[in-house]
Length: 210
Image 1: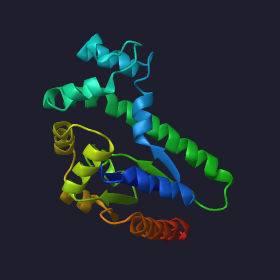
Image 2: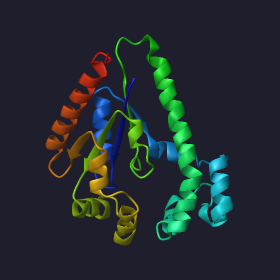
Image 3: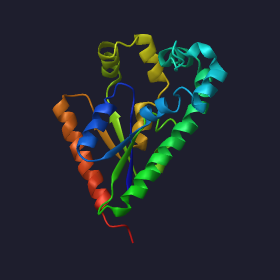
Image 4: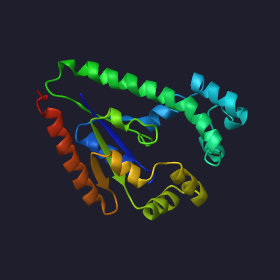
């Protein structure tokens, strides 16, 4: 198994990049999906969040009101730290389980799998060093804001708060082994992803160092 970290700021187009990697045959573990799973109704993660933030973070069906919770934590550094302390270890454990499952399944395969962990906070959580390759998706801040406000309908103040809570591009570049810049058309983005995948495939297929 050749393990790759994929990250990028909100609105950078990381999900589009991940989807193309899947088309090219890579296996993707999506940390955002895992983050939703560990706070589903009945989970210890959701119970811990309610203990910290109160039942007001639940919707009428007893599920987590994610926008409501986000409105609380992205304006309060201490609250966000408390939420991260609840969710990050659980997300990490679930991702580790899935990586291990991929490694076990690879035993009968003739070549290494490329397994990509798509994680928006790979840099912020200090996990980048655990990956032999880290792919970072970058886009200009103004373009990211425009995408989030116009395409997702997000409030500009909410966008600004979320961007401030994430690592800056200098920190992302410092951790990257591969950089994809998503500031042009879809065709150009696809070409970059294909080139990075070819590089990852070559590294995965290379004989181990003596």
